[in-house]
Length: 446
Ligand SMILES: Cc1ncc(COP(=O)(O)O)c(C=O)c1O
Image (cartoon, rainbow, N blue to C red):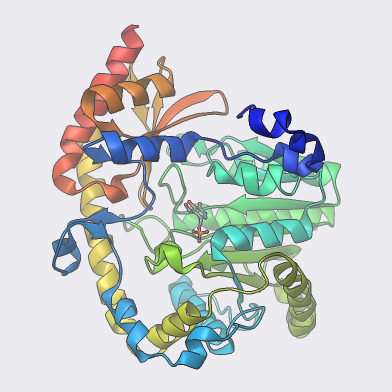
């Protein structure tokens, strides 16, 4: 944490609120991605898909991957759709279209969700959605239950801003998700407070892991069992930022929200959006969708209506409302040219799948006495645990000796490297993995 010398010297530090004093942006990802931009030839720090424009059928230099049909959407919208305020909970046509998109995405689950889910409310990205929902359900000091591999920004969103405690359980049981550990953690949470708030994120950042359909069903059943046995609500927040980016057939192809929705005693909350799903990171449109237990279907509209009223208050008093033109363009895109959007996105998924394959093939050569690659099958990242070296030290060697940028993670007593293969062109992946081996071995010898 910085020492805030200038603020202290002029006395303004003392004028800050308790929360203001606590605020700081952990340097991790920004520090390493800032350095990688300047110093690295291979930049595996950034959580956005990037590469040669030719790989997405476009001309020109390397670019952040995007969907061309959304880009052309700008030409077709009126000044009224561009310049006026969006409603607090989002543009009606966008909300309705996104609801249909959720039903379409979850359709292969075979579950009928239409009776269970609310109309999505628009948040400022998924980050905004997580903050708004967590703020509604978590009182400072209460716990949110997470696996021990999680996106570092949850610490800021949930702990520093909301005052939640994060309680973790082991993510993996071998090469699978640890359902039993999750259940124990949820039961402990229910024993100590009036509800449990659980946050699940598949495909996961930082591991790149998604469970199988069978494991996902076990997760959903475990949450239901905990809720029913305790007689208390389980709020199951599903951070679906990377939904759709799966690279094997055996992992769950849709959001775990579809499995959890409708379970007794569980309020499932879907947090998704255009940032990764439609490769529109800067659009800042995320969605919050509730699913009530099946037993509550007759009262669904009343219950979700009141939850939306609460959300309106939270959104109006924090960000006021979200980006208007982007909602219009995405609504038009999903309604009128979903086929083209999905084909364009499939091309990106295909590029990332090949990178993931090459990454895994190369990682098979890892010296397991030095580093352990973790099971992955989806998303934008892969994670390796270091056996005896410090993550920062390996990242430093990678940057200075090999000109490769990765994000070191020291959390839950482990030293790991997060490798964003999403932003590394395939031809560079073998070189990058060799560099990781060499740097980890060198740091282990020190
Ligand atoms: C797990 C996870 N959730 C949410 C987000 C943020 O999404 P958004 O850009 O929509 O706020 C990210 C982005 O890195 C992420 O990795």
